[in-house]
Length: 145
Image 1 (cartoon, rainbow, N blue to C red):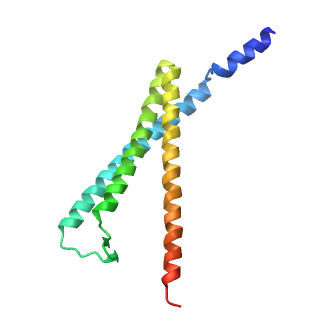
Image 2 (image 1 turned 120 degrees about the horizontal axis):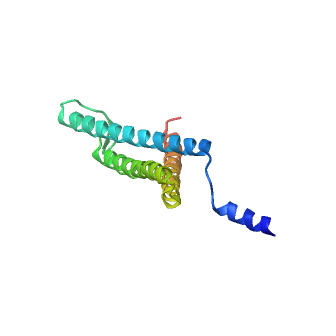
Image 3 (image 1 turned 90 degrees about the horizontal axis):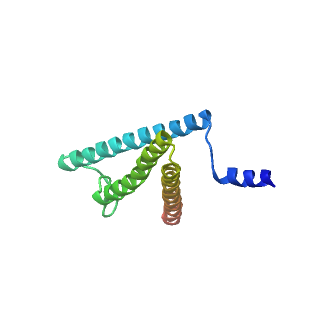
């Protein structure tokens, strides 16, 4: 009887050994590095867009109305990237804070932010794959035979 109560408590009260702590610390570290590098890449992408739009360089039209340096596509990319990287950075900071203070609520928030990051990333990936399939279907339907 006492063993059953102990088992039920151990299901919900996690204790981390040193290996688990190191793995979570590593996840937090790499999530932070990835988020910071993604923000730097995003900044460089915006700078290159501004430089290309100010130059006299002609970029060919991909579709009517859409050019290779379209501001709308940059806006969509920036919005998605900022949302993703904010969640990734939040997860990194919350995981680090949770491990330093052994605070279960911060660890839970960190894993929840990481889960949200992967959900958004998965949804964006599925939408992009569907758009590519639709694009292939449209090009194959209108291609000369």
